[in-house]
Amino acid sequence: MNFAPGFRPPSAGRSGPGAGGGATMENLEKQLICPVCLEMFSKPVVILPCQHNLCRKCANDIFHSANRLWQSRGSSSIAASGGRFRCPSCRHEVALDRHGVFGLQRNLLVENIIDIYRQQESSRLVNMKPEQQQQLMCDDHEEEKINIYCLSCETPTCSMCKVFGRHKDCDVAPLSSVYMRQKTELSDGIAILVASNDNIQAAISQLEEICRTVEESGRRQREQLAAHFDGLVSVLEERKQELVGHISREQDDKLRHLRCLIRRHGDHQEAAVTLVESAIQSMDEPHMPLFIQSATVLLEKMAVTARASNMERPELGYESMSHFFIDTDDLTDMLQNMDFCSGVGDEEDSEDVGEESELDFGCRY
Picture 1 (spheres, rainbow, N blue to C red):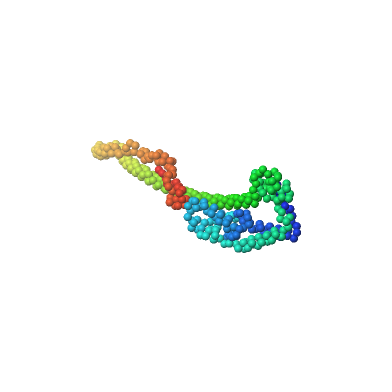
Picture 2 (spheres, rainbow, N blue to C red):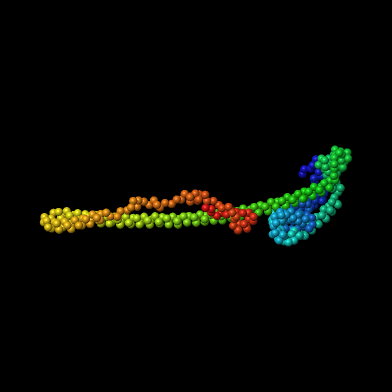
């Protein structure tokens, strides 16, 4: 153990019949130290559900310091349930009833042990020899106890150092008053740090909850966006089938008409070939009356066939299908520039995250 300059520690060893008992009392004292004020428990002592003990005063200070953050945010659940309290030893969170810290159970066993310890310690000090009660002596004046604190040099010293020694021109204060003041300041600092840790833990819990909300909201919006695009694809596919059907129907009508013309022209061609063959055979007829009679009939048929040769033909450009044209440039630009609409999120998201707003993932065309 290190001491400040000017201190001389007492004899480390203990002899006599009380040496073993002193070590036992010292071990017991360590078990009776409050984790907040680092002093022996002051009654009443409360026990938490996690089985850790606190001075009720320390627990009350921590409770009020920790819940100021929630009260400043306007949380009504704190007042309704009595608030929450986090154990400074294990960080276990305790939900308090409407009585707050005063509703925690007192640990009467620990209080009784403290009473017994103090009685035993008082008896030990009374029976201790004067040389054993001596604690810290001045290095410059070996017969003088350290009983004052030099404020200028910030070090403990003795009265002789103030009167005749190196601290005679310094400002001093009673060691006990400085001791109590610094112990109080240290205790308050511990309570503030514990309360600050509770506030930080509460903020971390809130941020973790917001993270979960963001993940859930992102998943939900991705699903909605995918559904919007699936709907667009379905509409495009349906419209494509309709337009392709128009082209196919007109193509079939034109092909049917052209094939009908081909058949008609083929039939006329066959009739003309047959008539030519008959005319050639009639040229070999040796009898003039018979030739004239057959030639007259053939000439009439040739005249009819010649007139019928001027058959229907498709108009110019009939074969073109280029009039089935669709301009998708504007639609392509519109799809490429599709973006999220700026607006307020859905009511469910508003309830989850309070005043925070989300982008409305509707599609803008």
